[in-house]
Image 1 (cartoon, helix red, strand yellow):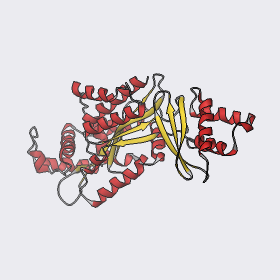
Image 2 (cartoon, one colour):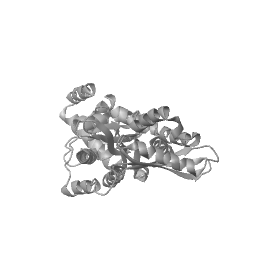
Image 3 (cartoon, helix red, strand yellow):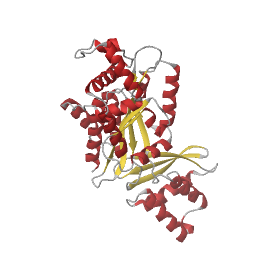
Image 4 (cartoon, rainbow, N blue to C red):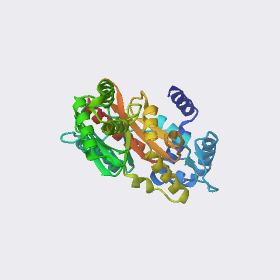
Length: 355
């Protein structure tokens, strides 16, 4: 991060006032239209007092620096991902949220009568609607005290494990069981686990059950023991950096799709967002990060995809422990000045609510 800041300062220092202005105008035009802009068009903009020939020379210098590129043979230019990074880190003027925007975000984060996952889903949906991007939230792994566990038969050889935490969060897992398992085995497993919950987390319940089973082999019959082990195993690895990704407003990512390759790229993103691995990689990437993090284009290797930008901020408890993250994914020409403060404010509201 320090190296990137140093590179930004160094590159900006190499640009004179005219070069900065031309570069800023090209980026602004890209954010507005997504189309290449030429020297003649720039020269006609209000406040531009230089000739098209001079602008062409500046554009050529900026292209040599890797900040602009020409997508085809026309004279128009677009910012590169390196150019966008320079703009966001060094030239962007972040706006302030209106009172209506703050109230809208806070209303979606009110926890009264709702579980944390529902609050996070609604907050993600609100961000999606306000930014016209896909809202993304990394829900925390399940390490809160439990209130109830139940096994529900679905079909021969399959059952649903329903887990309820003390704060009202409900999670479900599908498990495979031996064919012909009698309903009494599910009932016995349910009663046995609930007798050992006592406000414990999943990992604490697992440890208590392992100890109890070793000391009292006769308390459970063989079939019920299989159900208990399968139910607890369905949460295995949950505390190894897990959690889940919740995405809302995916259709917004299709708004800028104009060619088949873009459509395939967005489809690839959708597929990546559905994997648990993406949640773990995202949380690991954020690590001890503070405040809003911005990934532009190919920088967002979390999903092995270029062409989209992700603006995301961690949220956590009062002790500073990061337990999740919330943000948006959109095209590289998203309105960073508007999106960044929205993501930042939403993360802070959630942190305050959790803390």
